[in-house]
Amino acid sequence: MPPIAPQPANATLAEQRAYFAEHGFVVLPDVIDQTMRAQLCEHIMQNMDPLVGPAEFEADVGYPGAPENRHAPGGKTPRRLLHAYARSDELKSLATQPRVLQVLRGLMGDSVCLSQCHHNCVMTKHPGFSSATLWHQDVRYWSFERPELTSVWFALGEENQANGALQVIPGTHRLDIDTQRLDADLFLRPELEENGPLIERAEVVELNPGDVLLFHCRLFHAAGRNTSDAVKLSAVFTYHRKDNRPQQATRSDRFPSIDVVGAHAG
Image 1 (cartoon, rainbow, N blue to C red):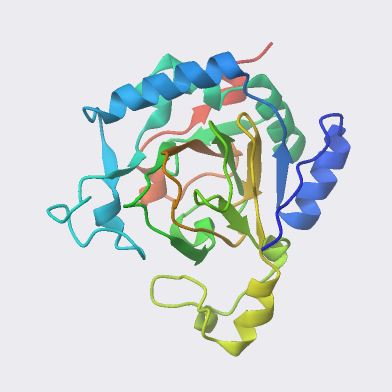
Image 2 (cartoon, helix red, strand yellow):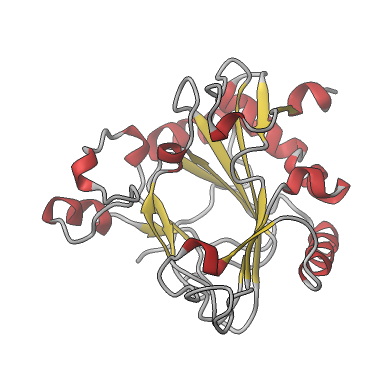
């Protein structure tokens, strides 16, 4: 699977917006400096051992490669540390990085909100007990007035095929996929002949420490297992326009969104 090159550091906002519109994602190189990454990684590891706050375990999701249950070997391996924005000032600062907000405003306009209901987590992909995530679109599990949200993936260390980097199928945010091409859990069915050409277009998003990936909520993406010998840490937040409201009485409406532009204006 071929890797994707990040956008040049000197790419203009207009170029980033055009690339995102065509491909459904864009990579921003070298957003988080080494000092901030080191502080974040130390903070996150302290939250994992012993485990602090709400978390999702690999055994909870039942994805390929995951432990059968929490009592099996590796069953208490955390997959995600939840409610990241409210966990600490360090993670709140990450979610509101000025360079990222600038690009989000270029994609959405000035009314950018962070969803506290979706992603809003630290992804902790551990060697040995990590699971693979099959091809899916995030928006199929979310409930907003419009399917127009953008997720931001912060690489706190190197991300490559060996440690389970994200894979994407460029341009699929612009496609309407018949639900018959999906399984009961809304994953793309790889055994269907008509899905073959789509999956063959997949590319792996290899990221250097400090790089950031922005991707559309309709973009098909997946991830492999971590076959390296080190934990891979990433932080992921999802953003939407203020006028794109979550539908009431759904899981997208459990917690209020945060106006990150208004709170960090100037």
